[in-house]
Image 1 (spheres, rainbow, N blue to C red):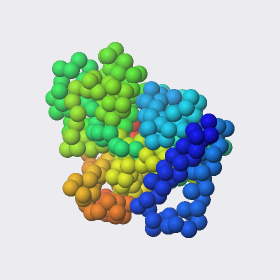
Image 2: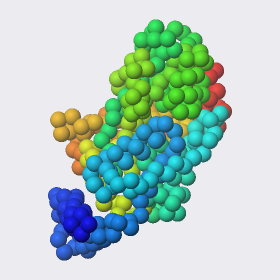
Image 3: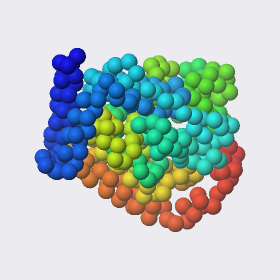
Length: 374
């Protein structure tokens, strides 16, 4: 037992050194931050027999649980001490967005609907970390929390799913087809292609939406291919849409992990999982969204990717009925990711003009929906 405990101590300290190598500018030997991290690693290892479990907060949808399980798997691969039974707990929380399904996200108030209860549990020390679909996370975080980790990103594109697979693309949809989607971003881009399409509110988890599609409630729907892949359901996609067909949402396909500020134990664990390339792209996209002061009344799309070491960004805003659309592109280094996104958002905001955004603010949800379903 003594030998096993010694091995745990050595493993934890080795992990600590691995995480801080290459970050000497932030954790130079002898610095306060270095010392705190080192002591955290040693204390965790030496008290491993009595250590509290790492509690992962998540929503209860099949997709959210798949993402929480993926996080658990990655943690256990990185940290042997987390492989023991009970070392990690999955804590399921219901959010307002999960409970009210008969209204659009816009009518319910937009961003934060899938994160508020998780934030509360985190700040109340009911959980240690929270796993989020990054596209659901507001551009501001509650005071006392940080989001330092983004997992490697899945395919970010949207999937087009037709009720019987006979229609292979958006362009092939007959005039007047009914499309199920709760996303104004998707609605605006669909109606820009074909104003005769009718978009209807289509909420619920992935399985619920696909069941409605099978029941003939709508002719087709669009879902993020990332979510389908994470649940091994991508075979149901009729087609995967490229960016020219449907520019994805900001942070689509990315999983973020949040913890309390100053929680060195949780921070040490989740920083080991961070994927710098994904985080740079998501930071760029979220800075774009923040510059536009985006809300669920404004159709906004934004995607960044790394191509041959260069960060390339593309963004879009539109009227809900697709009648007006503004687009932008930008590129630079990943070190300047947030600045690139912010500048692109500011430029697009100036191009669209104050009147465009004033109309969005003044519109009631019913007016916006009226434009779409007329």
